[in-house]
Image 1 (cartoon, rainbow, N blue to C red):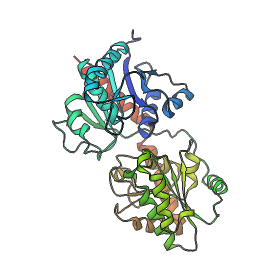
Image 2: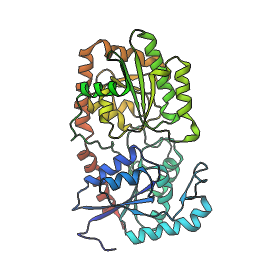
Image 3: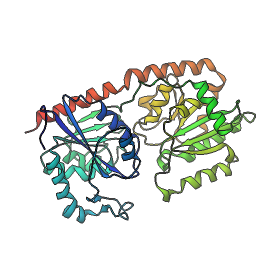
Image 4: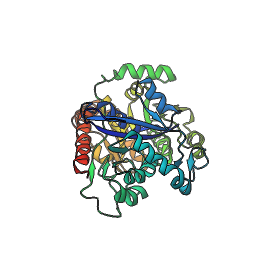
Length: 395
């Protein structure tokens, strides 16, 4: 396959299937904004049936599919027909992936999630291509500490927090922190209109306090902690109905969080006030219509929804953990609270409720901060420079 205009060809492999999250959104924002005169991005999906491939099709993004190559999987994923163990990977998948690289003739392979890191790092290395390992997960992860230092040419993390804690070999000269990109071209919805529409949809009282959780429903993001916080807030304002809206899908059905979270709400006496809203797209009107976003997660490398809410004018209260302190200046652009105490959310929520001037200052400062630091152009510029540096150093 011939290249045109000496552009750098960058391959972006994705699992596909039902997997879609912040890493996919960030990667697609990068892909769509790369300079077409300098770069030729190629999207590859292992399993083309699912919401991510559907999103690409709806947006007119082209991609290649390789559903016949099994992916190296974990114990949880090996039950599926498109996953394989280590032996199957080495015998079949590894040579097949090398053949794909030869066919596409990529200069750089840019992986964006754990399974793609583990599946593509070795064939990329053996094929003499450059590998950019984009780490968006736990700094203690096995892959980022043991595999990436050996096989990746360059490592990018989404925050200082996400940088590997104990790399097998030094990555000091090969690791960059580049915050995720955000699209600020869209005009934010009017908060009053968005709130009125949300209240009408759910039958919520006008004087209610509406709190939101946005993200995949997984243990690490602690939807149960969110429910406990909503219950604690309701206990402090018994004359005001407090609602906790959980936006997102359960990632692992075996976790049964779609059952245990509502059960906890019932146990705490707020069952009617906690609602599982499911996956909503577009999400901006819902995010703009709530009174505050609560982020109870632990080990959050750098949450997309947190920045999106700040841009939309929704105040954010987050645990003082993970990458949250890198995004929020406590008391100025939002609030940071004790990660272990659900009741820690009570004070900042009530401050915002009772002091409109404080809320206005927080919202204004937060929006100014994200516009200055998290735009798409800045992200694309930094990643583009890394791409060109990889090619300049290639033998």
